[in-house]
Image (cartoon, rainbow, N blue to C red; front, top):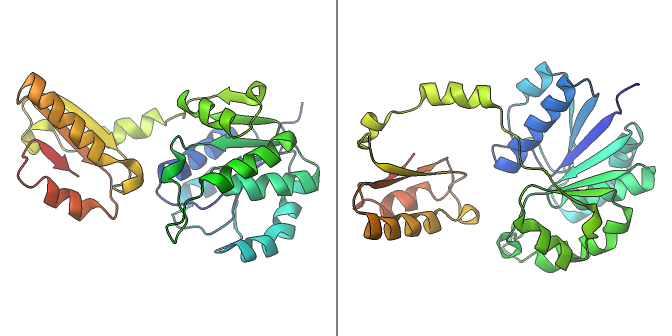
Length: 258
């Protein structure tokens, strides 16, 4: 049986977690024998060499605004027609990807990554919650399945009108080999000044408000108040909040911003 051709539609490719997950997914599907391609509705902002090595082509539509995305819809629809299944990951690719799949008469799968809609805002800081709820309600009848990576997403999706029978929970996969290589190269406890027997919280994500590192810091402070001084926290990942987090934790040697 010939493996189905897959088109993965994503807003962009960069160093964010959801975008990295798209890369891992595409490479994994390609290794299973599926012809896979990726379409970025916006832009490619990361090195795609590993995708090229896996035989996964990447197309950029350059849709920086709703109007330019609308003008790119015919091109996206043409890409969908070359595929057997369209996988749309993350807002607002879950909108444009599913619309293109419907026009091309291809089954569509949506992948949801968010739990807190209030943290999903536009480039200008405007809330997107109502718009995302509207697009899920309208496009769900045209969607074969919606994949949630966490149980907490189910309630959000149900409230937005997604058919519960179509919601499938699939936790994000991680490339263990790459993680082991990174761990071997990373800083040791001794290098960071962390005692060998200390409890350590690790928060790996972009250092940005959306990832809520300050909640992790608050949790660590509460644990230290309860358990004592052997609790440390690592905030790992570059981002626009790095300098601010370093300032906020300057007097807390148990908090490490890496």
